Structures are given as C-alpha cells and as structure tokens.
Amino acid sequence: MAAIRPEKLLCPKPDGLYCAPGDFYVDPVRPVARAVITHGHADHARAGHGTVLATPETLAIMAERYGADFAGSTQALAYGEAVQRNGVEVTLVPAGHVLGSAQAVVRHQGLTMVVSGDYKRRRDPTCPPFEPVACEVFISEATFGLPVFRHPDDAGEAARLLRSRKQFPERTHLVGVYALGKAQRLIRLLREAGYERTIHVHGALLRLNALYERFGIDLGPIEHAGESGKANLAGEIVLAPPSATSDRWARRFADPLVAFASGWMGVRARARQRGVELPLVISDHADWDELTQTVRDVAPGELWITHGREEGLLRWAELEGFPARALELVGYDEEADD
Image 1 (cartoon, rainbow, N blue to C red):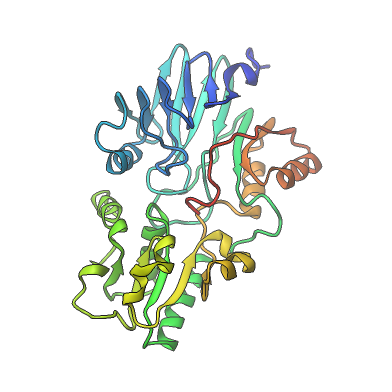
Image 2 (cartoon, rainbow, N blue to C red):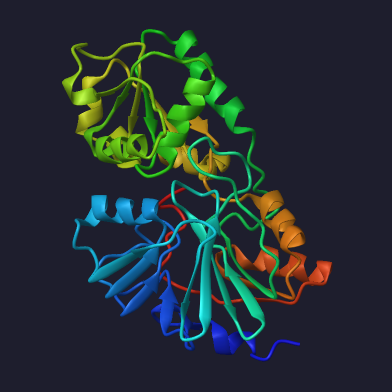
C-alpha cells in the first residue's frame, strides 16, 4: 500500500501538472520556478521557466527555438538517470515521440507515477522507442483516443509519396510537415525506402534538420528550396511547414502536388479543407491500438488522461477494469505537432 495518495504527489493546476512534495511542474503551460519538460514541441516546452530539467536533446531543441537564455538555468538528464528533489525521484525514459522525447517517472514514498508526455509505440528511425514502466498511476495523452483512429504503416505511406512522384514526374511534390520530428522522420523514411536524391526544404526546417544531424541522425542530401539552382523543382520532393504549402511561397514550384503528413489526414474532411491532394497518414502520436496496448503493457492501478479524446479511452478503461479519470488539462495543441 502506497504511503502517499496519487493526488498528493501529482495534481492538475492551472499552470499544469504540479508535484507539491518536489515543488516542480511537468510541462507547465506558463512560466514557473521549476519545470520538467518531456519534449521540445512548443505546447509542452515553453520559455521563461526558472529551471528546466530535460534530456540533452530537448534542451538543445529549446535553445535552438528560443535562444540560449530560454530559462534561468537548465539541468540535462540522460535516459535512465535519476535525480532527487525533496525526496522525490525523477527519471526520464524514452517516449518515442520525437528526438529527446521522454516520459517523466516520478517516485515518492513507495508510489510511482508516470507522465507519458506525447508518445507513440511504432518504430521511429529518429528517436529511441517508447519504454513501458510499471507504475501505480499512468498519466497518458489521448490525442487519437477513439477506435476510428488506426494509423497505417509508415513505410507504406512513404511508398505512396514515391509512387506519386513517379506517376507525376512533371510536378513538384510539396509536402507539409511539422518542423520538429515529422520533417526528419519523413526524410529518414524516404531514405530507408531507397530515395537518395536531394530533398529540398523550406528555410524554416533548416535549423532543426541541422540539430538532428548533430545528434547523429543522418538525413542525407538536403538543400534549401529557396536557393536551388533548379527553377521550379519539377519532379522533386519539397518539405515545408503546413502553412507554407498554400501561400505565395508555393507558387514558385511546377504545378505543385500538395501532400500533408499528419495523423489527421486519416480524416478525409480535414484533407479536403486544407486542399491536400495526397494525404499521408503519418503521426507522431499513438493511435487507438497503441494507446490501449500501452495501458495493458503498463498495467497501472489508475489511468489519468491529460488531453485529447478522453471519452473513448475512459470508456475503454472502464470496460477493461482500469480505474480512470480525465484531467482536462488545457494549453496543449493536438494539431501543432502531429
């Protein structure tokens, strides 16, 4: 029997999940004195905290995005290492979401609680895979927490892009990707599929691509699309932030065929709304099967759900015999990084 109730160790506050015994927040949505950050996406990693604890990769991502002085001080914690504050132990283990992403494992007085952050279970060539950790309370996201969300094989989606390029060699394939995680993952998927040509990218992707390279992720030949010697990049693959695929910047290319890599591309209406001709269902979040399998693997005494499609996962947990509750945390953008 745990000597401390879960709500006394971690509880939802307006600023985020708060650990009172350790006096720190996990992924706070506003500046706080002490923050544990699970990964570098902007809805989880914000500037202005007094002290930030995160993996070396996440700290590097935050410095790249916000500048070297993004926090008063920082502490790098490698996967598997532990630190203590006021008797509370914190360990970071891989979450499989993006480079440097981690689950925060919080232990105190015989109680273990795991904050998943954002995660997925399928292989990602740019980051270590998710590691299940046995715990009394698992605090999970539920971005795709409905049975309708079952993502196809990633390699198959990359193959669809390459087939389209062969079918329409006179057109530029302009692919919307998020700058952190999705861009680098799609590049690696294309390389693994045998695509060795230069991949052209929007300038907004250059710095994070270079950061991934510094951490040992080989992306192959990359070129700034705005500086290409080819006039309209006919027959080439160009990656850009989603917003750029429909603005004036995109007009320079040869009859651009717009694609978008996102888990939300499984919803046809969303693809149509964005004017996407080639929807690629590639997500950095767990789909329904991954979410439910993770709960089974972790086998927690309680399941807490931070944000997303809580209702479906709550109902499933009830049927499976896992006590569950929705925390209804606000400030996390379900579409900003998928």
